[in-house]
View 1 (cartoon, protein in one colour):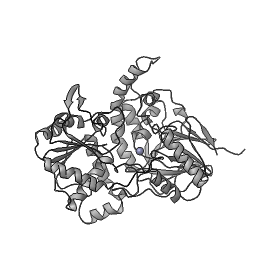
View 2 (view 1 turned 45 degrees about the horizontal axis):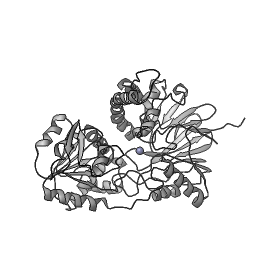
View 3 (view 1 turned 90 degrees about the vertical axis):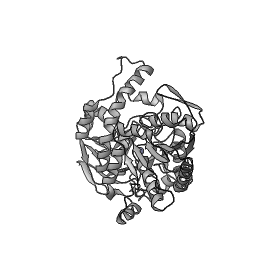
View 4 (view 1 turned 135 degrees about the horizontal axis):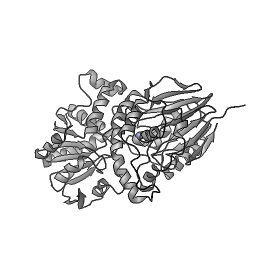
Length: 461
Ligand SMILES: [Zn+2]
């Protein structure tokens, strides 16, 4: 009897988060990515639904990269009885040792959120998992090399390639019973600092392609020029520059850009404070994985400089280090998380400085609706932090171009760089508009059988 290979979509189908793809042949089941739903209320509540596959029946899990919307569901699957190996790159493993414990802490908050919004039959809803489940999960991780084929089960092998998105990120070609399935993972931007460009990948019979920006073409704004303009004003005002930034990826890119401008003499050396324990640890991990850097960063190292250190940089690990920043004077740069000001130490800095005219708050990433970051960007005259109303007199700025996701042109460039042509393309990891526009482009311009993936559907090869 001819064996069949099936791929089912249990997340990031019709939305961006919750990536979970189940691959089955007649003898094994492998899950590719195991992410939490994030963002809108309806999506987040889905994390509390019963898993749509049986964790006991899984033989292995494969991860494309460390972001929580690709990995944050792992401890729950382990809690429900999955005891097999979790395959990922060495850098992904390191980043998970930061991200998953943090996610366990956030679970308590999330359980409160569920109890408020969902009429649970088993009241009250409990956190999805705790630290003990995270510890078990981390023990199950098996590191695999990039650019080499690893046989993970008798008839299943995987070949991960660099995706240029965050440290350790990959696109993966999976061979199952002689059939090829390509998972794009999240594709980074071409020419962005620190990491190499996304690698070309062999296209299998089926391609699962992300589409976060599948309907947008971003102009290649020169981050250096925009950042310099902001810093020149900060020097003039002699006040603090507060940059809310994601701890992993964005913070390191910012340090890189600042260090580059200092080396080139474009900005004066200012004190830089990285004030987020996760960002401090993530930067340490980035520096340890310098063999994963791109040619420009290697060249900087060969010249004796460190691409991830400015001339006067302080990494604040302890709370007292963070508090001591309040008493400083003069122009200075504070990079702190969270990136959308939904929590973290950045709130203390904004509370302390937002009412001062000499202060500047700079946004370097997307600010979702309903976040304080979005309110500030939209010109709020007052914001609430820890219940206190704060009058906003600081200047609020924004720069684009630091995204970790390729735009439509770059996604197509990545696709065209691939070897071979997939028979079927399922467009995933995008809002409905982005996914359908990207699928249409692949259908019309490349004559491909490309459609947006639907939640719960199964493709048979
Ligand atoms: Zn990602």
